[in-house]
Image (tube, rainbow, N blue to C red; front, side):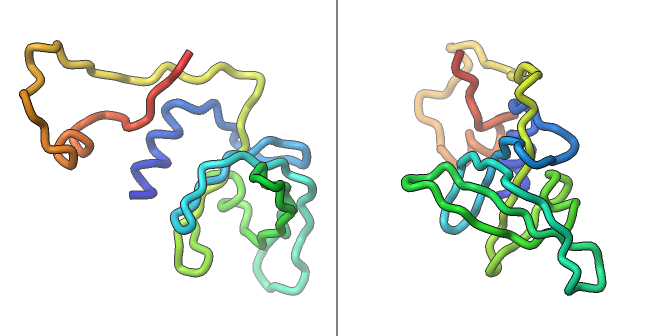
Length: 135
């Protein structure tokens, strides 16, 4: 499920390939369900580990705002990889505020081709994207 959501997000969000201090990032979580933004306050190496890990300090734009530190590998905080925390999927990636959102690839069906009653699970899995752009 997370893999499909991330694929949909990458079609409609102007994401950056890297993440720097001061970036706005989009945060997605499986449980609890999170679709939120955060501000990257700091990225510092975690010297206590053998491999390359980083302490990513961020302020989640929740009510009230929450300051958190997640210890992640670069692939995880740059949107290259879905990762788990406590066994639940997470995804973060910086938003490129200098780019417009990419045009999504929709294949709308003419009204007369829609069945009278659709099975929600069938229509969700057969559609190209489950996110909608509001302009």
